[in-house]
Every structure is written in C-alpha cells, then in structure tokens.
Length: 171
Image (cartoon, rainbow, N blue to C red; front, side):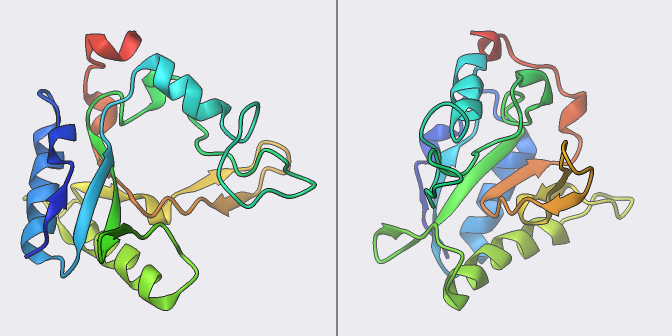
C-alpha cells in the first residue's frame, strides 16, 4: 500500500473521480506519491504559463532556451482541468525524495505505473475515466506537426470540459 503525501491539497470541491484515483493509487502502487497540484486560479495559471517564456522555467537551460523549458501551454482557466479541480499532478517519492526524473529506467517505470493505473479505469460503457499526461500531444503552432508532450505526473478526469469553473479560479 502506497502512502500519499500532501493529501490536504485535495481541497473541498475536488472532483470525486480525482479523489477516487488517489485512493486507488494508495491501494495499488508499490511506491509513495506526493500530490503537487490540484486546483489553479487564473493568477497561478498565468504564472505557470510564463515559465520558460518570460520567467525561469524547467531545466535544461540552453543558449537557445535560456529560460528553460515551457511548463504549460494553457494560459486560461477555461482550458484547464486543474481550474475545474478535475486534475491532479503527482510525483513518486522514493526514500523520502521526489523523483521527477524520466531518464532512468526505474523513473520511467514509476511514471508508466501511474499512467497504466489511470488508463485501465473505465466507466460502465467501457470508456476511460481518466486521461494520463504521459500520452498528451499538441500541434506545434509554427510547424503544424503533432509532438508528444510528456506530462507524466498529470492525471485528469476525461470529462473535465463539462465541469463548471469554480469561483476561486477567477481570482
């Protein structure tokens, strides 16, 4: 049974399917998880959107990308599952340390275990209940090509677009 750190991030109003997913992780995953993010206000979403564009983003930092990697492609709460409290970002915890990496086989194995757990859950009609960020792709606005956007710690309720944005998301 996995221990879930930062469960308090599942604030009142967190979509029930996200709570169910976290509970399932606790029962089935052989490693601990920490909840990093559930809800996002407009201010928080815009701060995330700026990372890698106008403020320091994620490594690697290169001459071509001195601010690092872009953190999100979503600049409005209307397009955010997090703003609807219908998504969760998690990270594996090993020996008390957050394991963000994707380079080592063991790191990838943990991310894919999270994804496999999310993707195997279906509703009564056999439709997936969750989407895993490890399979996200987007269309590059410059080239028009589709590219993988590996957001391995992100899991969202598949029907999040139909959920009303809570009042706090507009702050």
